[in-house]
Image 1: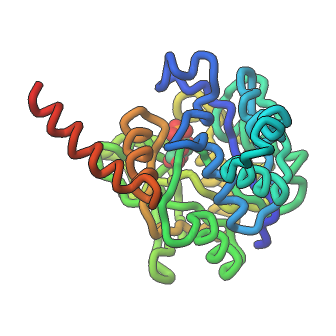
Image 2 (image 1 turned 180 degrees about the horizontal axis):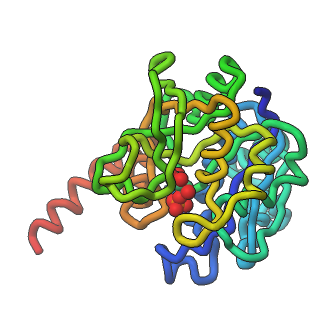
Amino acid sequence: MRVAKAVVPAAGLGTRFLPATKAQPKEMLPVVDRPAIHYIAEEIDACGIRDLLIVTGRGKRAIEDHFDRAIELERLLQKTGNPRLREVQRLLDRLQVFYVRQGTPRGLGHAIACAERHVDREDFAVLLPDDLYISPRPALAQLISVAEQLDAPVVAVVPVPPEDISRYGVVAVGEEIQPGVFRVLDMVEKPQAEDAPSHLGVVGRYVLPPEIFAHLRHTKPGAGGEIQLTDALRALCRERPLYAVTVAGERYDIGEPLGLLRAQISFALQRPDLRQGVVELLREVTQVSDTF
Ligand code: G1P
């Protein structure tokens, strides 16, 4: 496998964050001082990928504005300079960002199918912007290493407690062929805890071959009445080996408010300029809330 393109589905309606997402994309909600999708672009850049396709929809224009120049701001800040704005520009010098719109949100599988023309006959990475990582090596880089070494598609997984398993695509795995890498035998999208084939949930990073598009074309609506990427992967793993990689690092599910809050605190604690302030703040607010 050789990965030179990344696809980020960002057409979801973000209903869990209403009313914050009534007039802005959920991918633009801030984690400290960057929109969530910015961390995804940084992860892609850190893997040396230069081609990013974002699958958007109505109401998502702020994403395009974010990955564009901001001439007025640049002019205004020309004198003093702004390191963080320059940082975004440097990222954009390396990354070319393309867009395709998913007219109707019909599920993750359908969103990925919208990328077919752009991806063409190449291997590609998929990153779900609801999943952020703090890890010694970028989560996607960990997947790409395994995909290159085994010359096979891979999905990221983490152990999930039984009470949460019904929110995930879940893999049935064979032997652990190397530490943290399992052959995938089957997959099921959002099973009930008693039907889950394992405790390993798929978490937002995939390295896929172009054959996935043919499987997506034949995929009927599944869990939640949506076209599921998991169902196309299920067909793929019957045709060629697919592997699940347990990602080393901490994963944050920012698709729901408490997960976003957890990510905001943890990402701020990673920042040398903010760490001390956050520690003090947490001490202060926990004391204050105790008094109520
Ligand atoms: C999607 C996928 C699911 C995966 C999850 C977390 O579900 O369909 O297989 O486990 O992301 O990455 P969603 O959370 O969009 O419902």
